[in-house]
View 1 (cartoon, rainbow, N blue to C red):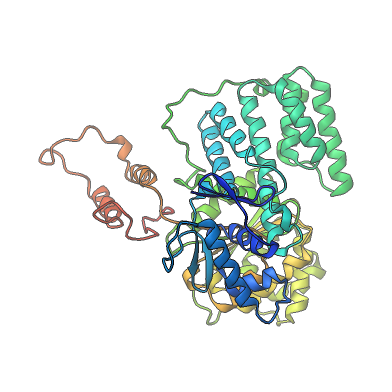
View 2 (cartoon, rainbow, N blue to C red; view 1 turned 120 degrees about the horizontal axis):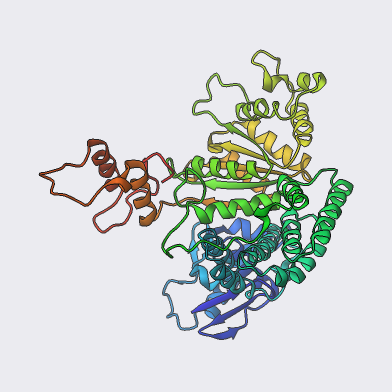
Amino acid sequence: MVRIRVLGQLAAEVAGHPVDLGTSLQRAVVARLVSAAGHIVSTDRFIDDLWQGQAPPKALGALQVYVSNLRRVLEPGRLPRTPATVLVSAPPGYRLQLDPDAVDAWRFPRLIDEAVRVLNVGEPATAIKRIDEALSLWTGSPYAEFAGEEWAVAEAAQLEELKLVAVEYRAEAGLALGGHAAAVPDLERHVAAHPLRENAVRLLALSYYRAGRQGEALAVIRRTRETLADELGVDPGPALRTLEGDILAQTETLQLTPPPVRPKRAAAPAAPGIVGRTAELARLTTAANLARGGFRVAWLGGDAGAGKSTLAEALARQLATAGWATAVGRCPETLGGVPPAWAWSEVLRQLSGVRPLTPELASRLAPLLTDDAPQVGQFWLARAVGDFLDEVPGPLLIVLEDVHRADDETLHLLRHLAVRLAETPVLVLLTHRPTETNDDLMATRAALAVQAAENLTLNGLGVADVATLVRERSGGSRWGRRRSSRSRSVPGGIRSLLARWRGCWGRKGFPRLIGCRLGCGM
């Protein structure tokens, strides 16, 4: 069994014994594969990343030697000329083929996802156990040896952000169990280190209040308001403002409510109108939290009907309740006759109701806002869009649907905004079909690699979620005990739905299709 750790100093074990991964560049091969989360890293990408764009003439040969050496270390018992099973060849490069629990950076998000799930169904004690298990994986900064490497920066930042989120989820679970007094010291240290994290301040203020320290609860909110105004020029978000008002009014809802007792198998949906996808929604929420510190993109892939739009809508609803502005733009199916950058036109027209346009800015944005305006150069139009979005109040979520069909103007605007809005709290969620990716989109992904906060690919729903879906869409929860088919037949609409569901599964219960056309995110 091979295990790899990157949450601190890079280390590996084989059958429970530490192994030497070799030189710094050879170790970087392992870390780079871990950062790819099991996906393929092409040899060209490897060469660019390992030698930072200044590869020696025989870089490919050196990479092949590193891979060969690592295979001997990670699979010491492998027979000559037999295929590798850990560091495997996968055209056009290599990938790491390990169980997700064998790599700490892969296991950590899974444990947090599980903690969020059980917390949402009223099991805070179990949530704390999962979070403690996740935090115990950390021995230092992620990818510590490679802090200066461009490919490691985004991955390390994402893991660090998720760690902060985990600390706050743990405090949330502790409060649900009545541990407000015990939570105060940890939250005080957390807020002192990260004074702009409003959710941490909310939890600390609530802990103070429940511990009978109302004055300190109001004081920490007041300090946060001053810090936000001084450093960012913004007011606290709705959650913190609401808590302050409730504390002043001594609202009864601030008192501890014991968690409801529920059957362990009960599961709450990830969000209204969505079945399953709890882990995926949690990962996108983490990406949104990361975007509070500046422009980020999240890639959401999947085949047609996989549920990309449904998940994007769920994220938009969730963020809207937290005070985010949201807008959606769609890349049209057919480009013939469609104005350039149509997706951005839809986004701007929606946001113009949030941030009214001045006459000067409306004139600069006319090519995207009116149908008969003369076209201007890409550079000047991109500057105008950036100026507008920079002044939209609050954090901003922009969803661009089906970017595998995006035209050049749409992608150019996206790349420009990544630079122009580098310090603006914006998350751009890009849905796409990986099988239809073209060269322009691949180039855009490469250009936005540093800003990438998440990269998700949706697979089909699990059997339990499919069953839930069928019950919800068919009214199955209202069925009585099964009667003889001779005395009562299944209603035609339900029979049709079940037939469509069965058509997605093979004889042995495995899905025939990655996506399903039941119309609700499968």
